Image 1 (cartoon, rainbow, N blue to C red):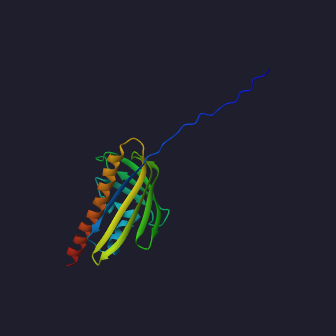
Image 2: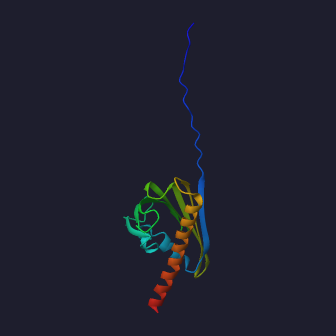
Image 3: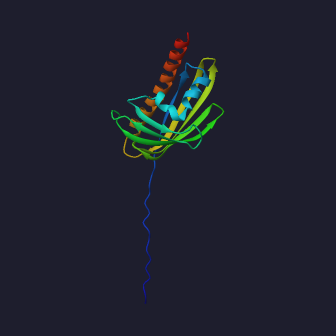
Length: 168
C-alpha cells in the first residue's frame, strides 16, 4: 500500500480596509479660476507652499504626467511622493493618484476633485480620496488629507483676492 501526499498551499486571508477623506465647501472664486489652479498639476506648490511642499518636479499637465513632490522636513512624513494625473474632464472633474513611491503611510491612494459653478464668483468644490493605510490610523490620515484639501481651497481664495487687489 502506498501513501500519496500532496502539498497544500497555505492561504492567507488579507483584509484591506479602505479609508477615505472628503472635503466639500463653497470656495469664493470663479469656477474657471479654481479649475485653473486645481488642475495645474505641475504647480501644486503654489497651493501648498513650503514648509508643506518644498519642491515639485513635473513636466506637464497632461494625463499620465508624473509629479514628484518633496514634503518639507517639518512635516510629520517628510520625503518624496510620486503622483500621476489620471483624468480630467470638462473643467469639472480631475483625478490623480499616488504611485509606487511615497513617504506617506498609505498605499493605493486616489483622489478626485469636482467643481460646480454656484455663481459668477462662487464654486462648489469637492475633493474626495480613498487609500489603504500602511502604518497609521485611518483617522490620522483622514484629518491630514482633509486639512490639506481645505488649505488648497483657502489658498485659492487668498491668492484670488491678492490678484484682484493688485489689479485695482
